Image (tube, rainbow, N blue to C red; front, side, top):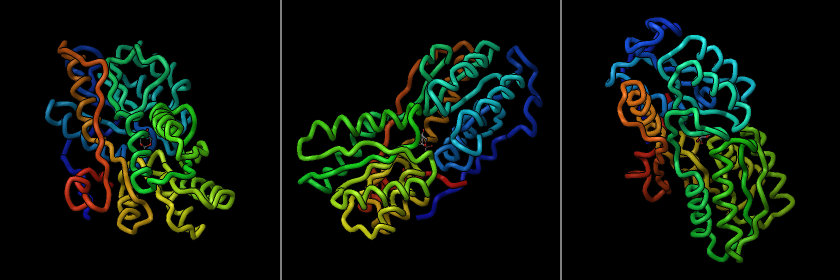
Length: 314
Ligand code: T6T
């Protein structure tokens, strides 16, 4: 399966602030701040943002912290706020720590659109766009149950507490697992978005409970590490369901290490984000909240619908 590159030819500003006549309708600059750089989910979102921005006549600058970490994301947001783009599309890395910096961006007159993740009080944002993360967690449980109908022990590998998306996925999974008496929910462990940590957590969990039947990994890096952990432990017959569909996850699906992926629609989240920013800037009608869908990818639909839902890697 070839993962297409995003080459929209969209204009990208060479330096922040260039071409931005602060204030007024001549400012056609959008800043995109990713949750983390180099993550195929946010790379694909950038493709969606750039394509829509080109169509609507905006220039985009994209930046992301080296880790999914609010202490690294906050200074990026602060410098974007100082450069006064017309709009800021941002995936906050923590519900609490990113509250004040983003509120300050909005107070400076920048139209803030939350894409993917959110904060505790998002009332300053013109719009919020995200997947149905609770529903995605439940869908992950259903996929494990489909593969292991007689039940057993299930474990969740997540990122860090305080991330709105992955916390919601855990909740959706946990509620569904606890409601089904044939399953035993072993709880959630946090990998800090590091695949090696996720692999170690999974190996240790399999040593303690060799009868684990299913693992739900709540994002790209948790899924990558969980697959490695199961492989290292030499465990056979563990069903892994991962959120997201980057190249490594598709490969693991093809290998048979991972049985299902819950693929989001990051390009739609991005293009919807630009549309909402544009509506807010031009006096159009803005939708406060938009929920995007997902596709369950298995080996069976990889050559069709599932393959189309795979993320771009560049
Ligand atoms: O799952 C996505 C995103 O939705 C989440 O908020 C953080 O992790 C990803 O970027 C995947 O790595």
